[in-house]
Amino acid sequence: MTKLLDVKDLVKHFPVRGGVFNRVVGNVHAVNGVSFHVNKGETLGIVGESGCGKSTLGKCVIRLQDPTSGEVHYGGQEITSLPHDAMMPFRRKMQIIFQDPYSSLNPRLTVRALLKEVLLFHKLVRGGAELDARIASLIQKVGLRPEAADKFPHEFSGGQRQRIGIARALALEPEFIVADEPVSALDVSIQAQVLNLLMDLKDEFGLTILFVSHDLKVIEHFCDRVLVMYLGSVMEEIACEDLHARAKHPYTRALLGANPINDPDERRPLTVLQGDVPSPYDPPQGCPFAGRCELVTDRCRAEMPPVEERADGWRVACFEV
Ligand SMILES: Nc1ncnc2c1ncn2[C@@H]1O[C@H](COP(=O)(O)OP(=O)(O)O)[C@@H](O)[C@H]1O
Ligand SMILES: [Mg+2]
Image (cartoon, rainbow, N blue to C red):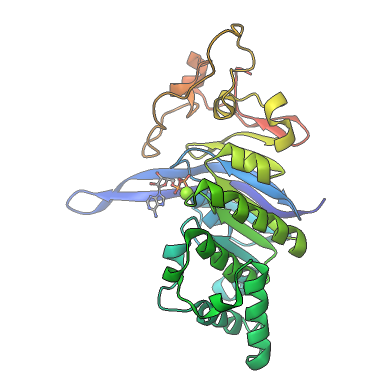
């Protein structure tokens, strides 16, 4: 297996300004030293509650945002330090699908105009009949009717709009796609259809996908491995097929709706996460999950547990499991 993406110790802090002089008074620690890789053709899920840094991580990986520090290697090339020009070919190969396709589609462009714009900008077709044929093929690939080409975004349902977002990403013949909560805004009945479409397209085009979701069930269904994040840090990384049997981190167990794995009292009701994620502005010392963890000790509050490899492809950041 070859690594397509290799992320090393990625950090993204957003400065917070305040006071009369508008000075930087602190930082939002959105992503706190995250490392992972994605193999070619693989789908890696990123799961965690809202605000834990998933979108920021996805954007930094494709350089829609510049990380504060850390490295992103794509196909062996470190890309965080590339100048604009050298980044261009990577921009085409790495695409993103957003949660809300409505806000990411220009409302004044028909589907045809929108696809034409990206196809011509990246010189993927010469125009004329070739352009028309490519647009028709993209529309068909994402399961829309040919008439869809001459409609505007507001004329579609949420699921159809997400199909347009997918068509736009596909138009660029990408290798790698960040799918940022691509079905979270859709009705449950529509979610499976859009997920199945993504799976089919992944196979057809040999795509590698970073799939961001707050919903572990969706990730389990769609991904090969999952990275569990909490407040900007990795808690666990594990193959999806091992999740129920092997996952140990108390946060992963809570997301699965299961008891902590070394809990002696099996008669306790299933873990239900209490409280909220702490603020990433001035985050707590030690393990970020300590405040909600059933297995917490003094050490957890003082020290951040390192992410340890437990077996091939399985990493856990916890002193207690
Ligand atoms: N452009 C930004 N400026 C300041 N803070 C931001 C910005 N983008 C995200 N954040 C903050 O970073 C944290 C992580 O956000 P985000 O990556 O969107 O999380 P998620 O996608 O997991 O919900 C949140 O506290 C959010 O408010
Ligand atoms: Mg997000």
